[in-house]
Length: 309
Image (cartoon, rainbow, N blue to C red):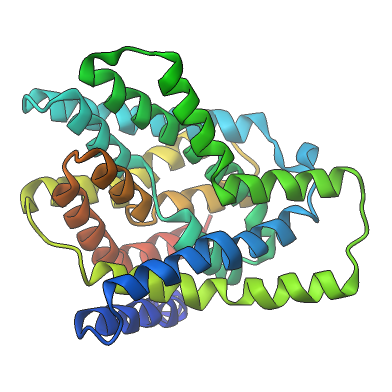
């Protein structure tokens, strides 16, 4: 584990540097917003497109993988929802808590870190994970929050969900990359070098942005945040491991990537949704902060464990 911990340290060191910059106001909240936009819309999109353009859908779309990941996520999602409702939490807040339990920071932390630690071949399973997270669970939370306000499942809600997916640069990068690959289009050298150069900014930019954004997060509602962090860092990867290794055995390397992805801390986009709909943003903020701090140790431990499989 110590060797893996040392390998993950530089990633978390960049996050720590970003946190320091945000905490000391050397990097303002406005600057963090624009850095995040640059990473999300340009650098990370270039990296994802470049990887996806070398893959074929038939090679990465493993239905056993999808089934195992979905089953594990739904199990943890239902557990988080039931515990929330047992505390008499409204449906919208229960949906936000369940989202914290199953949606990890795969885009900003998972792709840069796991692509280096586990090799570029880890990106193919991660692309499937991102697609499931965004298409299924990001859509589900919007439907539940909006529907709980008494509007029901209207065409406007479905239109909002559809437009959210279309406007998401990660989804678009994956789709465009796979289309490029399916037609076996050549990648001109200047384009390849442009994507490589721009994509290289994704890893340090994303990690720094995570740290800077954490500087503005509060640690309110600690008891609930600790519970949600525990679900995300321990229960979620455990459920994925049982599903992918025992119930529906997945190809070994892909299973390892799935488990490692499940061990990532709560994603920042959960906070964006919570803040947008004004549903428990402080609770999500605290969960992101606590799970990210704890993941310095827990993520290294889980990656070290899966390497022994």
